[in-house]
Length: 193
Image (cartoon, rainbow, N blue to C red; front, side, top):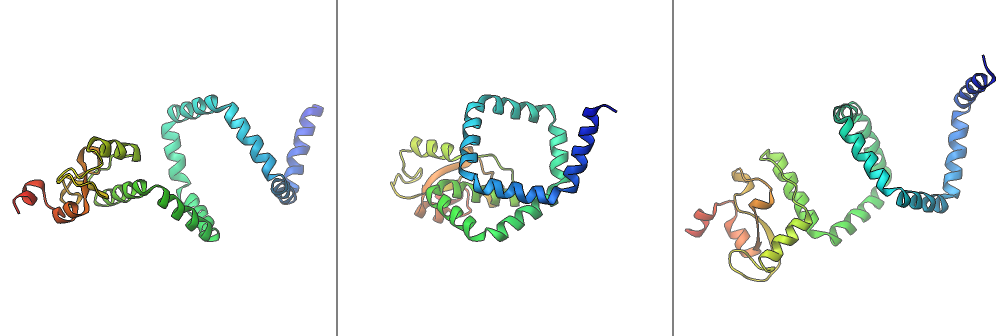
């Protein structure tokens, strides 16, 4: 056995025997040096942004089936860890979520419709806040049905409850009066009512 191999064996045994002590020491060091560590990591990520993006995409493309298997294998473990985190950081997460929803009302609405469509099983297509803003610009920030400039709802032309999908092709901006009076009817039924 070479001295290098003997050193490696010793290091492995030492790390195993002192795992808990090393964890505590490491955690304490990270806490006391948090700001400088975060600054260093942010700088490193910024300097290596392009290679990180390329590496991430390459890894996902190279082994999509392995990634799916890994996600499925560890799903319950990840869910448990996530639940534990949210249980211990409930107030912090509630503040963050409330702030995000207040700053991004269209994202909240899009998320709600996607979730609802997914539960029904009609098929969900990603509609981004940018897509919705472009739709609003196309209609001049006015209701697609009556032309009123007011707070606009995301109106599904073919209602989700009648088999419509949550996609940008099935959305129109509508004022509250038009959207709520149309309810779950098709355009033909609503116009002739």
